[in-house]
Image (cartoon, rainbow, N blue to C red; front, side, top):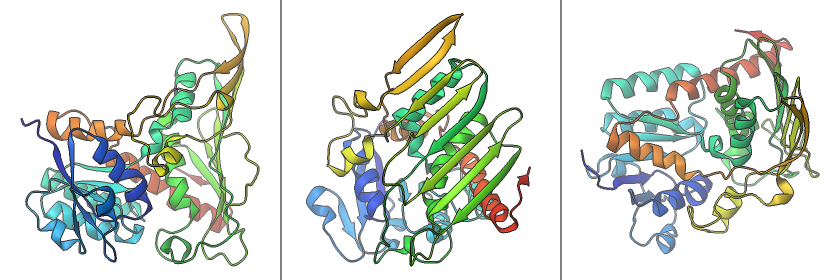
Length: 349
């Protein structure tokens, strides 16, 4: 068993590569950011002078030195590129959403098992501080038995972004695949697969071609979860609203890590993932017969823990944190959401 850094390549240096993967990999002592694919530019070399910049994915698949490939290309290319990476004998991280269909996900999972290679999905929002805090509140039954959880992931973008595949009609585009893949993964991570799902999906922005709004209700045995996203929310409401038989927890604010990465702050440095006090959530509940009301300090988030786990899996044979089967279930839910919206009926499982 070797402890050498994992030789890693990025298939793209778009938003996910530049903001998330490259900084996390470069800051990690156990990874070597070896190759970056840039088809029309080489500006990644300014920030990562030791990385090799190539203009085709073939040069990555053909390089025997590369152990791990991050497939962070447009959603409709995931199946092709993951297949080629696995066939080339590489471990693979796929940017979310895993695939466009659950059948495609099953196909890739089977191939990874056949090739005995690691396949996982970058579900980094499992390491949001707010989510970790909500997860611990639920685990410790601080609001009693859960009655309802409502989660929002809203933005204000009242225009159509030019020159991006994300705003064009096609396989796997739209806000549900983009942001919904995070939110549904969080809910499955908390509660497992629901009994039924009811979804309304729409286009709210003038001139929009892809969905930019959803309102989804997931029904469990004796409680329900609501997840909502819109690009037309200028005044942000709470991100998490949790109600139970003993009390409530309400939290505003989004995780600070993405903004820190955009500002080129170094992951893992002092204070990383720590949220400002103004965004700490409010808890109003009863604990052992005593009324408790106050703020709960948000647990620090750390997207680096995703890559910590990848190292442990590849080098130390430890369990995978984000199993591909879990991400396939996210895609099952997304497909069910579109069917529910089409029929205007809940989908039962």
